[in-house]
Image: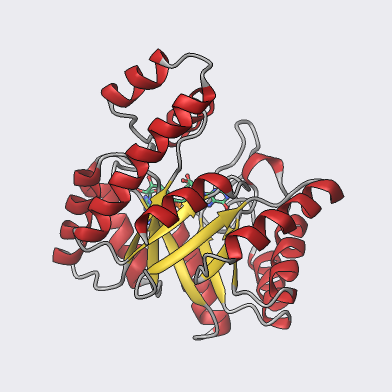
Length: 275
Ligand SMILES: Cc1cc2nc3c(=O)[nH]c(=O)nc-3n(C[C@H](O)[C@H](O)[C@H](O)COP(=O)(O)OP(=O)(O)OC[C@H]3O[C@@H](n4cnc5c(N)ncnc54)[C@H](O)[C@@H]3O)c2cc1C
């Protein structure tokens, strides 16, 4: 386990109670000794301040923190300010993203795509940050084709990213093929697999429709057959996702990034089975 690159993602809590709850969750997850905790930005209406507050909390507790930074709607000046704040807090990791504008939000700002953000971060801060970018083994939902998306991914890596984290998926073959094609196109950096534990079927179906992750038919049917039986959903989800992780690691995945949704139980249960 320790030779792999394991990380855990949170979203910034919106209330002081949420922040306290997340501290308790984090203390539990810290026992697993992940390489770093990442904190999303902008998803679900959260703010840059929420991301900053959460990563500062994480740093105070002595752990490595990686704020996500999305550039859509941002300007060079606003992104420069954010980078300076992170440097002032001794943050050395970033997950650099384009992000998504809410529909009807208007102009896209000074950055169109994540590769432009990566270039900007490198131009402004040299090698200060270890930069992670997003990858989509099942294709980004707005891409014209898988080939086009792969080319865009390669461009983003060549702009100066150190590593990538994938969108979550339940088809290991999609991941392995994506990695193989990226490597053939010259990407030598690690492509860490994003892992979404399964604990709630309606939430999973909603998320997956938004981000273009496929839930295999047999998984969907099984989940539906459990109805409201939350214990059976969790037990089945634990088996499915643990087996996926085992397959990924056995097939050479350099690490796993857990989308924890600010909960400790599911990530811990999968992790302990993998040890
Ligand atoms: C690990 C991970 C973490 C995430 N964290 C967050 C978060 O914290 N906050 C949040 O709001 N969202 C987050 N997202 C979601 C992400 O912001 C969306 O998926 C967004 O739509 C794309 O961001 P990106 O950085 O992948 O974009 P890009 O790499 O810019 O790609 C976006 C689309 O444009 C195309 N494209 C890319 N470059 C070019 C180019 N130069 N010319 C033409 N087309 C191009 C791509 O093929 C793709 O279809 C995360 C996703 C992942 C996988």
